[in-house]
Length: 289
Image (cartoon, rainbow, N blue to C red; front, side, top):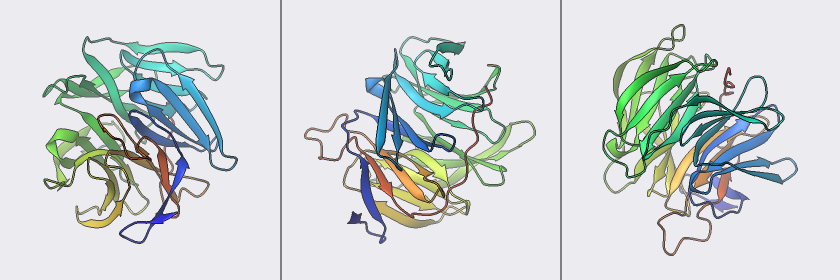
């Protein structure tokens, strides 16, 4: 256990060498932390109560994995949205391959819809999207001028949606209509200054504060609902990709990391880290499909 600048202590939950570890998600039904390694096409699972780990490979790059309400998983893949049924059978919910593009981060809204982002492999400006996908596969394109679609999350009351397009360096906030799923009024909540890295994945805690992982920033930051920076958890790896609360009381902050592009890579790059007792998370809904 190692203390960070703000007094929190991180531990190594799973020592690994993920090329691009991403998208940690707590599954309350199985008591597991799920996350992915995008570039190695892997779905990972970790049970902190037993230490048991699981690994499943996908047939193509996978940007996100989330639990489904009826069991199984929903995947944001290179060529669209796929479903893994409880018996491990795969099927497409929405198959929409675009050459040179892949799925990236995704999140489940309070109404059970999946908000799925995409990006170009070459990270071409404006080459990505953000779409809202309902349980029956109905898809609404929300943003069509995104570069690297990343962290998405909602305030505890569901009235705000937070969103990151990484190269902008901003954490943006929208007004969210819980009845229709529509978002309006996009505006900056906070901006990451030059030299501090780039905002990547995010999660929202029970106090409505936004925790943001910093790619090339070696840290996770917490911003208040007004956009004020009030915590910084420094970490031993530069490429911090995403964070999520997990554990029985949703008090432990799990953090994914990457080693892609690092030569030499620090010893813990690509590992799953955890900060026990970092705060209090909010139970995440399962995908309605």
